[in-house]
Length: 322
Image (cartoon, rainbow, N blue to C red; front, side, top):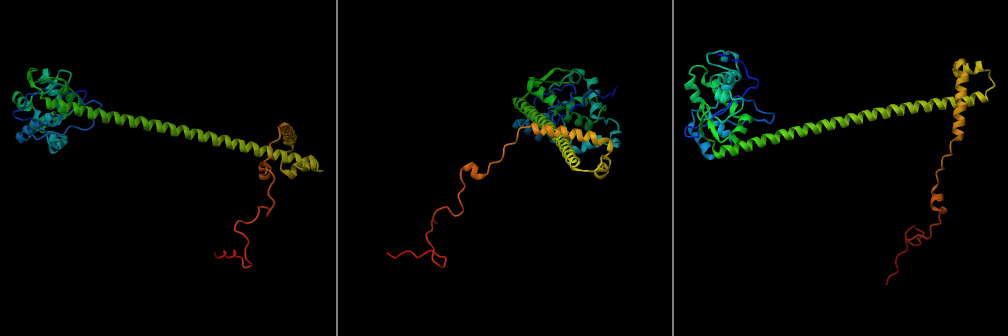
């Protein structure tokens, strides 16, 4: 049968407890953008008592995923990722396993959306499709599937778990529904916080770029103003020197290092700039302190010293005794 990979790679759930309510599964749906961290899986079929204890405590939706399937440990998932190990019979990647289950059990895994899985669904799959996929590959797929955000949303909103034929196989426990909803909200809060931080970082980067552009423009304008002011000053100096010299224009240009062809143009511009400066209003003179505050106090005219007369030795006279 086909092992084509679906568009999104589903997540796999964890182990099932023998006495837990029936759980049904949904088609392999990839976790939404809100998914940040996978829900921890509980023990596999070798520890049914631990899974039952997690169900009884009603811990989290993670516990529900653990009760749904035989969870794969990290070592098993690493083995599945190893090409040498995955080459064995029945070893399938999670994507290939999702495609196979969607083909074999379309009512549950091919419905186009995530559905709550019947508890102990892994045993049913292995009984209905023996030897098609080994236990390790199926555990990895179910662990990823039942810890996805899409599955947790289905667990929080659907009242019934479904079996491989899509039939009702027990109600979703209230503690599982509550824990799944809390986990979805936690992931959404993390996602919203990350998006807000990204937007703030983008705004800060844009503001920094704007300030850098403004600083560059200011520096460029300041350099241009300084160059123009220096050029005006040099032309004014050249004009004063030319008006005071007795040299011929050729000798004057040779002395000043100015091309003779440019002399008349520079002198004309310097005269025009001198006329413009003469038409500008005079700048207000800076007032001295005595002009702002009235007549200045003459040196030494501050009145008698407050500490009284001093003795010839420079010390104040002793106070008279009572």
